[in-house]
Image 1 (cartoon, one colour):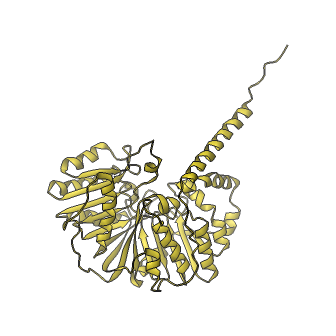
Image 2 (tube, one colour):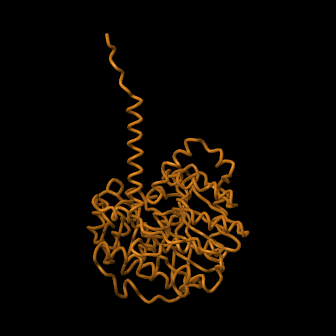
Image 3 (cartoon, helix red, strand yellow):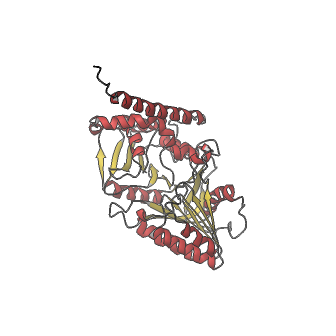
Length: 431
């Protein structure tokens, strides 16, 4: 009597795993084929950030715009009241752009403030990202309430399954401009995760910057780029672009990066700043995925005596894949003399860099390929010792809540971490 054959469960499992791996590799190959040619960002160290050539080399402008006042706002307890007060003060126009705008306490407060101004004759334009603010997070009734009050609400690149380019390009910018004269940018999301003062696991650590002065016009221009592309409306006139007098003594620029333009603006600036460093580099970034050229620039800086410190999220991380992909580079960085710290207690969401106590930038751009080559981003850039000092003080306070990540710890990481690091590498270009 012939015994019935047992199902080959092991073979089926192996086939399933093989199919998944093959699918991942095929998807990664397709992503790679779609990528434009990568510029060479291995910039030699030829000058410092104080050199006259630094600004035109890094920003492609002759000089920064003088006459600005900037104020850093830490965490929701400071950020949201300041922004809401600014909205309520509007008399003619409000332009508002966000990646994350979700229903909840924060979303409702901004919804109501924007709607109230629109109902009182202020021209309110709201541009939200279709992926960052999906219907399951931003309820239709909240959008409709703003629209009924007179707000123009549009969604950047509504998802189209047949258009990979549309899905890839997201507006990650955070922009609020009131009456063309007062601006805010940074990396905050308009959701309840940003409530509080980074005092609990569910209250994220983040920073926004309040800006007055002529550079606000550049922030408005960044909004116009995405608004015009989405709606077809060209913004013009004194209500949106007034002549702005000096409000302070900080030279500044808004660097607006977009996949529409060649040159990878944010990455070029970061690369030239890293290559120019002579004393210190302090990078705080929530999604830190340096490519090989960035690792080379950082370790080269450390070898020439620059103190290089990187602050990233710790155990609390809302996108584990980015931490996994970025950790693969930690070994070379640590071995090359770069210090790495992981923030504790809550999600660390800030994106800033200070070089040599002079050059400073803060904004929406993560240290990853998505921000450098795919997303719409905007960063404030300054060349001012006092502004840099305030950002450095903020960095030191955050460092006090962080733990050092060592080379020994990286070498001893478990096999499961090594496997996941390998598995996500083909998808780095989309992270």
